[in-house]
Length: 124
Image (cartoon, rainbow, N blue to C red):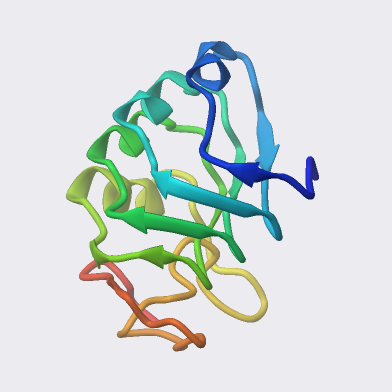
């Protein structure tokens, strides 16, 4: 866990192609998640919850084929989870004891305090 910090994600972060875990939860980070997130292809965990991110999840996140945990609840990220990210559920994203790790804001699964994400791929 990096924090606490504020602002947006620096573009240099996306140069860390061998990064496996990125835990940024509980900060005051804002802005959108860049399409460059797909360059972090070795990620197994991406924790963005409890921040002020906005926009939608980029489809390039689907390039992170080792991703097991994606925590996006309690942000202002909205829209529909891209098909490329949904396809990760059959590859590596898995059900945890309490909820689908990547879809804790999912309207079809357990609803958190900020249900902005529409997950057509949830099957809970």
